[in-house]
Image (cartoon, rainbow, N blue to C red; front, side, top):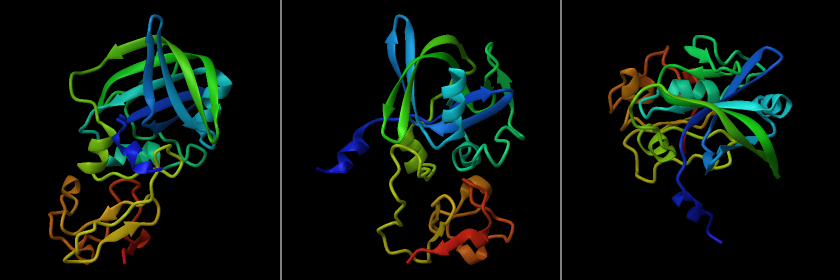
Length: 229
C-alpha cells in the first residue's frame, strides 16, 4: 500500500470553534465537509486530545470559520500549534459571536457556519461530529485557502494531532546555506526562500536573521531552531 495516494485528496483550512461554561476555544482543522443539502449538514473530524473536542462533545455545537488564502501563517499557528489549556487563543484576535454564542473570526475569513451536533462517529484517535446547520453567513468575497496552498505556497506545517500529519522533510535540493527546522512546529527556514511575509528577503541565511525574528507559524524564537542535517 502506498500512503502517498492520500496526497491526492483535497482539503481546506478552517478554524473550528466551540464553547463550554463560558470558555471559548478553537483549533485549525482541514477535514470539514458538507454531507447533505436538505437538511444542510456538515461534518468535522477532531482529535480526542484537543480541548475543542471536549467542548463540542459536552456542549453539542460548533462553528467553522472558512479562512481566506491570504490568512497569515501566524493566525494558523495561533489556532493550530498552541493549546487552549495553556493560552487564550482569542487574545488579540478579532471575532464575533454566532447566535448560539460561538466565536467566529472576522478577519481573513470568507464565511462562517454554525451547527448543532446530531450524531458522532468514533474513529480511533478522532471523533467525526456530524451537525445540522443552524446559521451561516458570507462575510466577504475571495478565495478560500486550500491545504495544498497552505503547504506549497505558504510553506506551512501540520500539527501532530492532525489526521494528515506527515513529518516535515527538508528540500531534496542541495542548499547553498543550511536549512533550520523549528523544534516546536517543524517549520523549515530555507535561506533560498527567506520569509517574505515578514520582510526577510530570499538569500538571507539563518545567522543573518534579526535576533527578534520568530517562527512564522508558532512564534518560537531562533533558539528553538536546529540545523537540518
